Image (cartoon, rainbow, N blue to C red; front, side, top):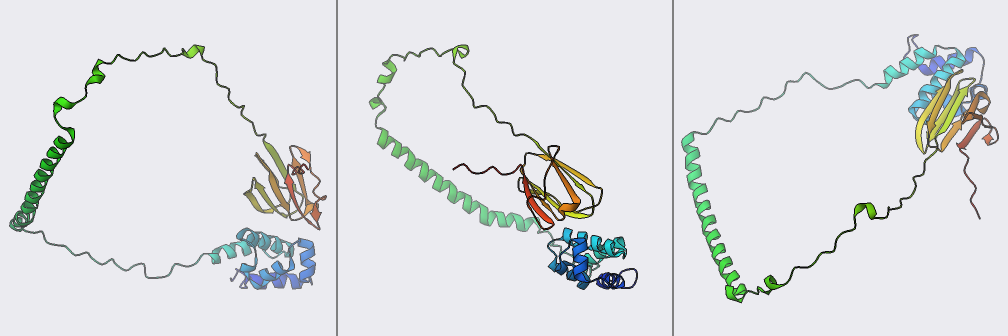
Length: 264
């Protein structure tokens, strides 16, 4: 991927790091990006990075740290990501063949030779089926005088009056349970990576720039992962959250509201 300066993205990042006389390990400590991801950026091994948001976010953050035109590098990456359209698109479609219409005399002859014998056969089979059905019904039903008509002499059944609607007891329904809405706010003091999920549904993942504030509301629970706990502040229902209590190094993974312990 060649930039506007005539160098590739990896060469631009490597030259910027060498000018400041920094090693990969020193850059990883100061940007909080894993060394193998920094090496992948300088070698343009994009498949090593976890996702597309990680590629663009880490590239922009690393370029800003080295001072090597971060916007130009991101724009170059986006342009080279799109695959060019190949193949000859100007080829004309093959013309379809036109079938000449059949003369009316041939159509009439075809109907006379095929349709009329078929209709005659269907009519004969229909008559045979009707004759068999008629005699079968007479055989099973017998004479019309043998039909039992005693049900006509029976008295009609007396129907009990229904209970009026207003006298019925009301049906008890279970009360609906309202789910409280949770409020989450995150503020970044420096460029840091952040991922937020609401009820196992991802709603944000990427680099939160310095000074930015993000807010979300939902039923929860919220799962939050911070790339740098020292540079981010978390507020749950307008109450500050101690992110360093569950942090491992600079990374913290927490759930809001906290999970309840299981009762023994």
